Length: 131
Image (cartoon, rainbow, N blue to C red; front, side, top):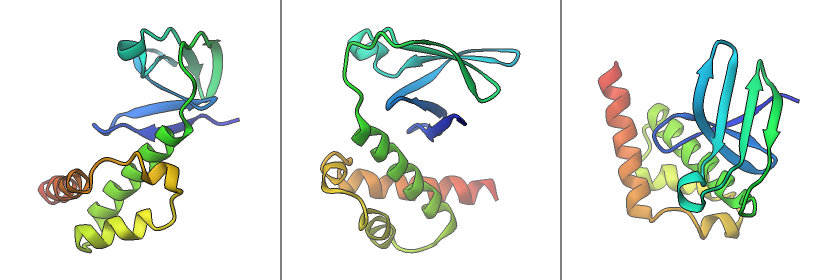
């Protein structure tokens, strides 16, 4: 089974494995070491070692439950940013088109609308500066 990734708020790759989200700790040759994103907040000990799209070791000693809605929010925010860079709709139109099909549980934990609009504008500025 191929590994699944989502972009963080800063644009870095985060690994999704068994409904937990992991961030990169070390990269050695072809091996990646990932730690749970809740390490700092909850002192979670969840770790994953991967090599070439396969999990070679997994420490699943999480001290919290998996949050599927959090993963979905990260996916929605990444798609909003990607759409903002490619389509020049207004921020409100961009937000409405992406969020119209998400479940209420996910919509309830999205960041405030003003923050999402600010992220859209920043993504456009970054894309325009790269051209």
